[in-house]
Structure formats: C-alpha cells, structure tokens
Length: 352
Image (cartoon, rainbow, N blue to C red; front, side):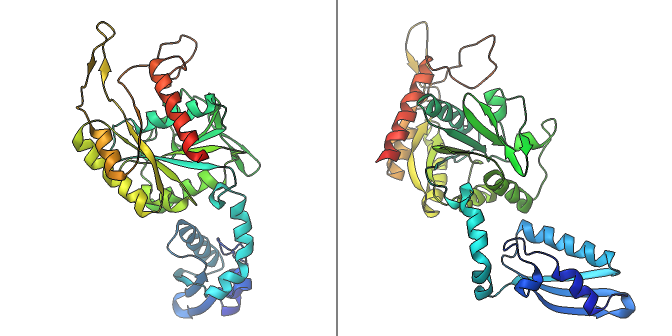
C-alpha cells in the first residue's frame, strides 16, 4: 500500500519539463490524497506551463510510476507554479532556448510562406525560393511545417532520411538547402492522425532538436489557411516575415488576405505577395494566356500594403535524366530566372 511518504519519494524525483528541475526543487507537489480502501492516489502538481504536449507526457509518466509503486488508480490535476518560482529557475531554460532557433539565433532570418487555401503552389514557391537563395550564396534551411500536406521532400527529389547524431537530428541536404519534414517521420505516405498537442511538439522539435548550423534564412512552408497548426507556428517563432502565395483569380486573393491579416495580427511583417500560375505562355506563338484570371496578386498586395515579389508562370522544369527533382526549376530556366529575381528582392528587403 502506498503512503504519502512513498508518493512524495516518487514525485520528488520527477522533473518539470520546462524548468528541468525536480518537483522537489520547485515545490511542485501541492497536494496528495490517498484512499486506502481503493488504493487510489490523488495528486495536484504545479508546473511552469499547463495544457501542453509536455504536460500530457508528464501526466503519463507520473501515472505509470505511481501505479508501479502500488496505486490501483491515479487522479491528477495540474496548475501553474507561482511566477516567482518560475522566474527563479527560468535562466537555465532561457539559455537552452537561446542555443536554438526559437531563441532568435543571431543571423538567421525567418520567412514563413503562407496561403489562404491549398493548391495554390505554396510549397513550390518555398522550394524554389530556398534553392534560389542558395544559388545567390546564402545558407538556407526549410521546415516543411505543412504537417498534414507535407510535400517538400518529394518536390525536391529527396529519398534519404535524416540521421541522429547524439541528441540532434541532422537535416537532409539537397541543392545546398537543409530540410526537415513530417514526411521523414511517417511510413509509406501514411495519413497523419495525431492530435494538436503532439503535432505542436513535433514542430517544436524541428526548431530545438535539429542541428541547423549557421543559417542566413530559414523558410517555413506553413499549412494553408488560419487553423491551429498555422497559429502554433506563428506563436513559436521569435520573429518572422511572411510571404503570401495566391493565384491571380480575385476570389483566391480574397481568401489569401485572411492569411495576411493573421500574420499582421501575430505581429509578423508581410514581406510580399507571390502570384503563382499567373499565366501560360505558348512556345508556339509567344502569347500569354491568363488561364486563372488576372489581377489577384496586385489586388492582394494593395490590400496588405506590400509588394508583388513575382508573377510565376505555368511551366514545368526541364527534364534531366540524371536529376530527380519534380518541382525544382533550373537556374537557366525562364521560371528559374523569375525565382532568382524574387530571391534577390528578398535579400534586398532584409538588408534595408
């Protein structure tokens, strides 16, 4: 049978997942109740942050350890530690964060690529902008944060997976761009059925547990729209500028404006608008056909008080026998030149 002393002994060795101090050090065990006739233990625990994926893991850990100690059933409640206790132990947590990209690592510029809805070519823009920045001599990484619709590895022709060195994940590198994606951590293109907190934890891991090295730019391919995962990414970033992707159709631009307004609400500057699928140019006649309408990109840029960074035509990359990368435009490809000019504009905007 468990006693209060035994329960305390078990709990005091458990660490707060945010402060990395034991519950004994933080005074995190506030209340213990034991119903001896039912071997039921009820505990109230104080931690630095509540309602997180880390709390869920801690809850499972505590329940397992108390049951191993003799409890038949366990009741757990969590509450937040007093601010003065959090502040007392915060410096260590802050130092750890400063060593990661979430701490606003000096020299790394964050660019979030967003859209109002799916299917407008947001991931294609992310990939080709990243490759073009690399061609201009910049050190670039991509986080494929489109958790449910990850496609960047396939677009870049990436077939290997990241390796783990010590406690760090080493990102895959292709065309000089470092990359991590949810696609690396699922088998056979399986659907993602995780709930929000676990997805949020995976995104945090992409920042904290990946050995990025020195980066000039880190591009994030956000999920379309303004849902929970997109909001998680926005809130995780210390600072970020945002590029909004749309098609030229006025309705598409209207929907994309929501993503732009969300960025502004989260205090992220709008770097510019990219109008994808802007036109099709016939190789036979040279005439441009505006398949999806006209003016959406300019209209969106006006509404968000920003610039149009580029109008991307409908065209496939050149086929290369020895290179598999379905969505990467070659440097001398007409669309590759458009992306190169876009990359130069991005660099110029960050230098001002």
